[in-house]
Every structure is written in C-alpha cells, then in structure tokens.
Image (cartoon, rainbow, N blue to C red):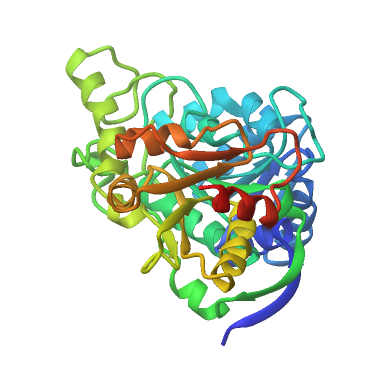
Length: 376
C-alpha cells in the first residue's frame, strides 16, 4: 500500500536510505544538505545502523567508504564545496570499486558561493567528480517523491555497478515541504538488490577477475575471502601493478561496466510531448516551474511539452537526439549558465536552441518560462 507523508526532500532522501537498507552514514553538515544527516542520525540507530559526524567532509566520505568496504550499504551527503573536498577519496571508490551513495544538495557556487540559495551548478562536477577515467552514474530528483525513489534506486545501482552513485537534489527541492506519495515499504524492500558475492573456494577468489563489462565482486570483510584495496591500478587480487595490458583492461572495464548496461540505468520523463510544437528541456526543481508553465500555456492553446532527464549521467543521449530531431523549437532552461546544454548539443548535433539560464541563486518562475515560450 502506498504511503502518504508530509516531509521535505532532504528528509525523504534520508528516510529512503534507511528503507533501502543503508546501515551506515558518514558525513559533515553543510548547507543546504544538513537535514539529510540530522534525520538519518535519528533513524539509523533505531534500525541497527550507525551514523557519525566526522571532523570534516574528507573524513566523512572516508568513513562512508570504510563502511561500504565492510559490506554495509553506506551514504554520505553534502553540497558542491563538500564534493570538492571529497574528490580524492571518491576517486578511490571508483578505482577500488566500492559502492557508495552520495547525495549532493546543490547550491550556488563556485567556492562558498550562495550557501542558502538554489543553483544547479554541480551538473558537470557530477559527471567528473574526480580526476582520471571512469563513468559517472548520476540521478536527479525533481519531485518530493523522487527524493525518495531515486535515493532507493541509487543504492541498487551502486551495488549493481560497484561504484559511487550520485543523487542530485537542489536547495529548492531539498527544503520544499509537502505531501509525498511513497511506494509500499514491502515493495521497496523486495526490490533491494544486494551486491554479488563469491561463494567458491577462497583460494580461487580474484575479485577483479570478471568479464570486461561487469563490476568487481567484492565479498564482505571478515568472512574468509582475502583481497587488497588500493587507489593504484591493480591486478585481479587488488595488488598494485604497472602491467600495461592489465592497466588498460582495468580502465576499459570501468567504462564498459556502465556503458554496456545503459538500459538498466537510463531514466527520463516525457510530459505532454505527443502533440507538442515546442519542447522544453528541464530537470530538478526547475522542471516543476516548467510543468506549471506548460499547463498554463496549454490552457491558452499553446502546444508545448517537456523532456526531463532523470538519469543525468550517463545521459539519455539517444532519446535526446530523437526528440531534438523531431522538434524544431527547443527551449533549454537551467539554474546555471548552461552546464547540461553542452551534453544536449553533443547528443543532438544542434547549436540553435533557445535558452533561459540563471545563476544568481533565484529560481525561474513559471511566468518567465511562459513569456520565453511565447517569444519563440
């Protein structure tokens, strides 16, 4: 049975983590994400888990990675400046293939920026949150319900692909309070997909010796299966190596394990596009303004619809190209100076989009979108 709850986006993300089987949280408070830590620190002890506030963002992600290494579903939450601080250890999780969920409640930047205001300035950061070669998996919530459902999905994706998975909220959706209709708890628990485990002879266990399009199989610690964690390029047992073939194969597999399974990751919404003459592309809280604008424009006889990416990275590039080929008039709107439009241009091969960008910490109202569309 579906559940109705009055809550905020940040609190719903914390509730979702616990419902999805998260057992450990390591983090540090930072506006506008702090409520995720506050709420989960109350919830986790009740379900047998643990939450710890570390001395800074770096220590927070280190603790969360340690929890994940031990076999627990682990979470950290922060905002853009915190991701910057966590960057080096996020890279460790990518190369060692440690599953981890990272909630980023976006605010204004760069640097300290606008801590209490909204921006979608971390889209490109989420694509490349650390140096090196790898494929990011990033989902973006647009509704209160998605603050819950996308967090649940992120935990399943992290265990499936054995790597960090980012959940992007923004200040508006994180602090928005309202009614959310959540899926049945038993349904959520039934959908939990734990990470694979090796059950053979421990002497034959090679966690990184897997197919070229599959993630490592890292057994839980302290259960008799030995392997090595390192941030260096490594062999099948995790020990450092500079073997040219093995190093190349490792990085190619970090790409292939995501690219070969896009169908398991990709998610998007098409809203009133069937008979539309104009397409709006929007995501996150800004999609709520776009939806309201579309409803009002439809009342005036203007046929407009919306495409909303939910999985930001890897992007739904085939669908973007298909729709951009179909619609001559396309409006791209973002709460930044145009971070995702670069991906839309790459996927579509077009450079002629109308745009509505803002990066001063203020939202874009439905009336502004209406005026922009009428001008098209």
